Length: 412
Image 1: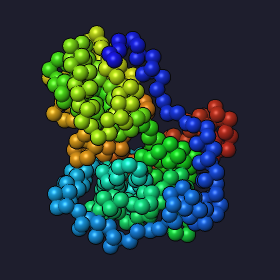
Image 2 (image 1 turned 180 degrees about the vertical axis):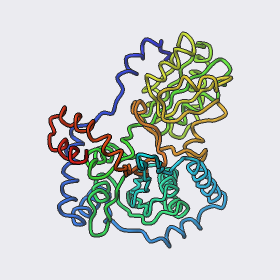
Image 3 (image 1 turned 45 degrees about the vertical axis):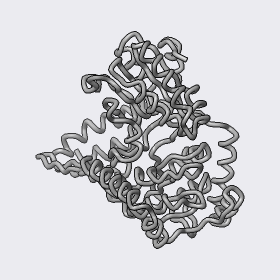
């Protein structure tokens, strides 16, 4: 079905993360039990929900899983790690100290000590998600990276842990894994931050432990929005929409274009390509969540894209670079149909952990800064303190904080 722009505008404007009250209540109980009982509760939930006790998987098994991989797949993993490392080494991570007549001001930038990475289980082993979360943490200088993935952990995930240089890996999943990393148990150390995607229970658990630990964000179903002109290939556009749609029935693939003929050709191409897709039923349901949208022009298409704030924004335009300046809200931008989002999922360089459900309005994709903390440094000279204290005291008294004002008066 081809929508008119006005038919989707209100829907795009209202996007946000939804939380199921039933899931929230179940998760609250799991978190409380693990916090109170530690490993006993962790094992109980793991046995009930996953059919296995929690276990730490030794590194020799990671190495064996890596060595058992086909040589070409090993090479692909190594290439992905190298490209992710190279991309994040370009991100600035230094602080500064600036000495002036009035003293010294600056910032200390320090990596987090310990980070937990959640890698979902389910129908597909997301070894790429491990690389995309753990490698940037390592580049940032995080001392210890701990991975949690539901039992039984897929050999591909073990191999990816070996390639990424992870420190420890636990076979544990769901809200109980988030609880263990957030609160710590005798077996599982407490982390400073938890990153990585997960199902509704994992997302609810992350939201509820925020403040005990830091978070990279809260991930909903994945989404792609493509803006295309008449130069784009209907065959490639359909393939890119289906690549996103096969993630799950809640995925949202969108195509916006002012070219009705293009949209009609893509609609026909989607029907054709669905016939041979192994996850066709999943993709078909996802296509119903998204759609094809006819816009007046490319300007309106970009305005709608910014309103939607997609996880992945693909500019399938004959000359995409001039349009980059109009992008305000997106987790990641892919320039031209020759730079498909599917490459971004695996090997382009930037992490594929990106904001969903409209949260790209206020948050970007996973970056080095997610694993760093900035500590301001203040060391003022005696003269600067005397000069500033009077004005500082005025501000303090305007707020009704006399103790602050008197502390500054003593420095005048």
